[in-house]
Length: 114
Length: 119
Image (cartoon, rainbow over all chains, first blue to last red):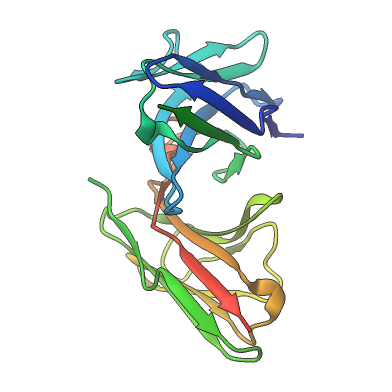
């Protein structure tokens, strides 16, 4: 069965520190994609970063990078130099080749302390 | 930039009313999706559509129907609203998958959400 697991319900981080949000996944498909979304208190889901299962390099987008470890089935999000505006819920998600729909993890609430 | 809009940010309805939630995207995406989000339950897929007049049930379609008469518009309909349908509703869209492999075109782009309260 396809599954996404986020084990950190909440995290507190000091401003300007780097933060790692954990995500593990399970799928039997060889082709799959992993996403991270940010959801501020306003409610909108904002796409941050994508990693394909065949991508050899870890994805990066500005201050966001995805630490993809295929053998361990993990896809952690790393935010460098955190800012107050990074406070939000973060969702890890996966799409797999046998379906077009995305499945989401339960989310991690990140709070940045000034 | 991809733009997905939803007709209302906040909506209050009474039990038994027929409710329409509208979603419009301007990126010429074939795929459109409706989710509901509840505390502790995460995002759950209600319905999705791969093309005009096409629809597929998601994980929790009971109590909902959808309509896709135009490519850019996907409507979620609550035929007779009930209090257990009080929730955050999120619409999303994406390109179709051209080949059997997943790719970044599978990325779904979301609207701002509609917080629906049924009294």
